[in-house]
Image (tube, rainbow, N blue to C red; front, side, top):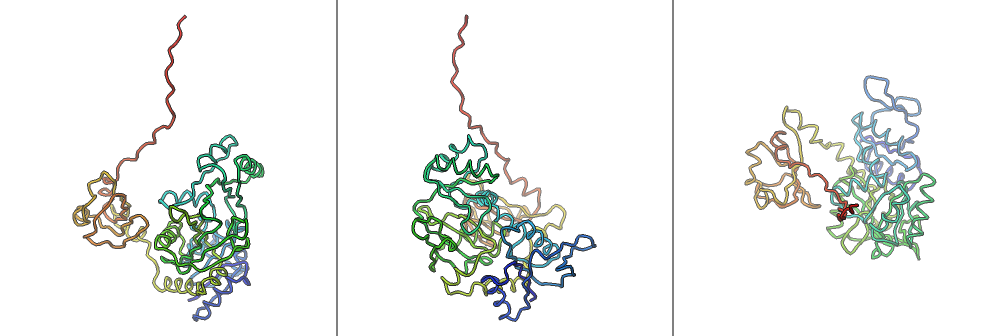
Length: 396
């Protein structure tokens, strides 16, 4: 396999470990500065230049895109995708994870547990927003930040209001998030590769510091994750469109709460804590994908007129609940269930004997008209405005 690692820090621990792991496995690997690429859109086919010369062919590319060059870096990754070069982390996945608001919006749509979060711009909305997430203390986060930079704990509402006003005056957008007291300055970093967690560590903040990042002086230790934490970590990475990701979770009383999904996770801390070859696991995964590439079902199966892929949700008042797939009548309607999603569990190619439950999500291939008829009309949101009591009109 010929692999390109996109990195502006060739001497960093993570880049060196990935390069060494690839070389030790007999692969041809190059570390290429992301900013030295030129995106060539002049020809009949998409192409890239590197240092002003045509780029040679690569089987795969591993992006290590820094926060400061997200826009240009994702443009380069997108061009590799257009050239059919495999990448475990797509440009869309990197962009989604890099923007904390966008990431929170995407994850919340898929029932991933997260600390209560809100986003407002007007000064008059700040205090109501703080009250909606549970009141002070609250965590204030810049939308784009890394290594704990731009994360502030405000102990009181007035302090939070002042901090937010100051940040917004400098045109910084911020999230307001509930402070999870029971986490006690600790969090979990799960390193996801493909569809499994290959390593996990617990990070503990130093002294009175509530941020547990290693760059903030936090300590690390290996941890064996409960199945629930593993499922949430893998599911969060999949939702964001990332095959290599560091998923940060808080240990809350209600279970794992996802804080962030990192598309370029550092390897030094987690390899030191776990003594595992995380870099090797990443390289092996990429090699396997190049040898047996992933098939995009939505693209490959929608070639027949009138057929396509859709997601059908088993609603609580629906007729499917308690029935097996065989009894559901889907096959008779020319619909094949490819995957059954139940909470954080994924059942590929489910058997006919699987019994359907409320809120199951079925990824199906079949006749579009048949599937469309099974999707209920969208509910309109009801106004939350309270009606004012009627007062008699004084006649004169």
